[in-house]
Image 1 (cartoon, one colour):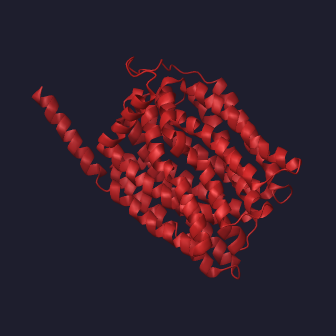
Image 2 (cartoon, rainbow, N blue to C red):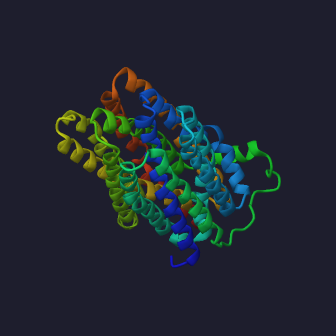
Image 3 (cartoon, one colour):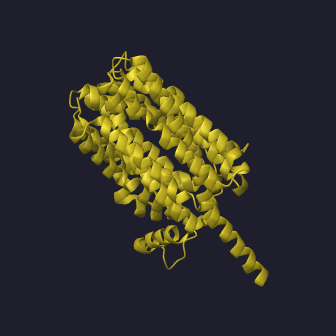
Length: 418
C-alpha cells in the first residue's frame, strides 16, 4: 500500500469527498434557509440527486466495463466541477430558484453514477488482491477524515457568507480530484468483454444482473443494502428540517452533527479490517447494521427535548450521528471488499452498477416518500418510520456466513473429485 499511484488516487478522492460534504450541506441550507423549501421540496431535491441511479445506473455499468476507469473518473470530476459552479453563479445574478437546484442535483447525479461505478471497479486495478480490503478501508477512512472538517468549516463559512458562495469550495475540490487522477498511472488492460457481447448494451446489462441474482452472497448484500438505503434516505432527507426548523439550530450545528458522524465513520472504517480478520464477514456486517439502526433513533429522540433544551437535544444528535455512521461504515467497508473479491474482474463495472441500481434506485422514492409523509404526518413521526424500517436491514446478511461456508465446502468437494 506504499504505491505512489495509490496515494495520488487516495488524495484526490479525499479532496473530492471533502468538497462533496461541503456541497451537500451547502445545497441543503440553500434550499431550506435561503429558498424556504418545505418537506416536499426537500424530498424532491434529494430524489433529484439519486434518481439517476435508477434511470442510467445499469447502462452506466456496461459502459464503464468497456471504458478506461481512470479517464471516466476524470471526465466525471470535471463535469461535476462545472455543474456545482452554476449555483453560486446563478445566485450572483439573482436567478437562483429551486428548479435550478433540482437541475444541478440531477446533473451532478448523472456524472456521479459514472464516477462511483468506475471508482469501485478501479481499486482492484490499482492494487493487488491481498490489498483490496486495506485500500477500501483507507479510502473510506480518508473520506470520513475529510468530512470531519468539511461540514463544520461549511457551517462556519455560512456565518460569514451565503450558502451558495460556500459551494465554490465543492467545485474547486472536484477540480483538484481531476488533477490528481491525471497524474495517476495504472496497468489497466483493455476490456475483457467477449467480442460477441461488445456493443450489445442489453446483453451486457443482463449479464451483470444475472451475476448479482445468481451469486448468493452478493444477492443477499443487494437486498440488505436496498432496504437499508431506502430507510436511511428517509431519515437523511428530513434531518436538515429537524435541525434547522424543528429544533431551531443554525447551519453550524448541522455541520457539527455531520462532522461528529464523520468521527464515527473514521472509527468504523478503521476497525473494519481488524474486525474482518477476527470475525466472519456476516457477523461484522450484521453488527454494523444493528448499530447504525439503533443510533438512527437519536433524531426523533432529540425532538423530545425540543428547542427548549438545546444542549440535551444537541448532545443526543451528536452521539446518534457518531454511532450511526460508525456502524454504517463498519458494514460498508466489509461488504464492498467482499463484493470485489467475489466478482470476476471483467464483471466489476456491471456488478457494481447492478448493485447501485438496486440499492440507490429506491432512494429517490424514499426521498419523495419522506417529503410527503413529513408534510402529512410531521417530520418526527416520519423519522420513526425510518428508524423502525432500518432494523429490518440486518435480516438478509444473517445467513451470509452460512452460505459462504457451504460454498467453500462445495468447492473442496469439487476439487477432490477432480
